[in-house]
Image (cartoon, rainbow, N blue to C red):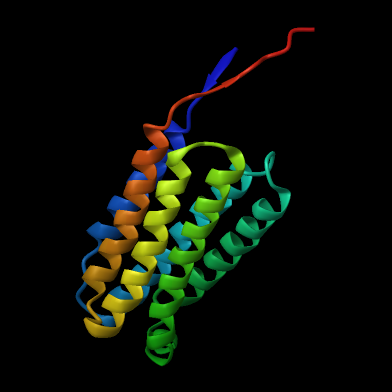
Length: 175
């Protein structure tokens, strides 16, 4: 029997979350870079989730894969583009929150489908809550520091859940 843990994915999520929180926020350019990077990181996380859930749910895995690719493309499109960001600033806040909510729903559903217990379920739950907070704070505060903090917190919490998840035991068949 082999023990499988998702420590690497957990550490990657924590590092990505800390990077999102650590970016300085001094101008519209920085905000566009931050939002682009945040959406790219969520896209990367969704891509990783798509590979993780492939064996238990092909449909969920394909949805996460498509959303991850879209997230990376949207994030690259916003990265450092001041004019595009200025035009779509209101939409961008909702896109970021929507990505967090959808990533949370995928995490929640994959937790139920894969039987991973509370790890993916709680990570998904926090993604949904933080995505909603992202939208609310984005509308009222329009302070990119709070928005970056929410994405970072989501990635850090998800990473911690991944690291401390109970190890799954796989049987290795010897032939």
